[in-house]
Amino acid sequence: NAGVMQNPRHLVRRRGQEARLRCSPMKGHSHVYWYRQLPEEGLKFMVYLQKENIIDESGMPKERFSAEFPKEGPSILRIQQVVRGDSAAYFCASSREPSGTGLSGEQFFGPGTRLTVL
Amino acid sequence: AQSVSQHNHHVILSEAASLELGCNYSYGGTVNLFWYVQYPGQHLQLLLKYFSGDPLVKGIKGFEAEFIKSKFSFNLRKPSVQWSDTAEYFCAVILNSNSGYALNFGKGTSLLVTP
Image 1 (cartoon, chains in turn brown, yellow):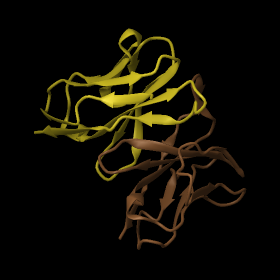
Image 2 (cartoon, chains in turn green, cyan; image 1 turned 45 degrees about the horizontal axis):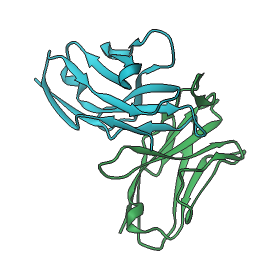
Image 3 (cartoon, chains in turn purple, red; image 1 turned 60 degrees about the vertical axis):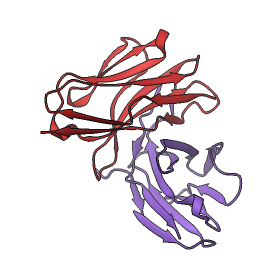
């Protein structure tokens, strides 16, 4: 049973380039969550998606960041015109059922993508 | 703003020592509580979780945590650590709010167990 897959594991970009991070959820999981971990910080929620729908993007920076989870294929986190402050580890998690208070949708995490912006 | 605090950033213990890692959250509503572990080079894995019921929760690998509502705490414990417990430990909370599914993480505690 494959777990949550993320690729690439390491991504180096120069300032102004685009970064595309991919996340394939576990089989049977239709809920995807993206988190970002800045150096010396805990993981911070960015966005929650279900197939073809963005449910909550309250943790996403207002500009340059977007996410999608198409009907077919992986979820994509896209960062346009990257800046040095975007350097971080980006983690994806998936769940079979919605997570939430009183709900048992355990989030399973991928290995993360470490983005370095030069 | 709601937050999750982990008091110890780095902990060094000898094998067989007892472990307690502190976690406090600042939120007055309903919460779900979690401890995740990240072994070197591996994914985040769930150690244990609390949703309701018995406030003493038992997880994998001999870990347990106690939810004390009056103290807003969810401390992680293990009576006797092993070298293989060397890892990063994260406390996390899901709040009963608009984002009632987003895990709010503490900054993590790095545990080193020496032989």
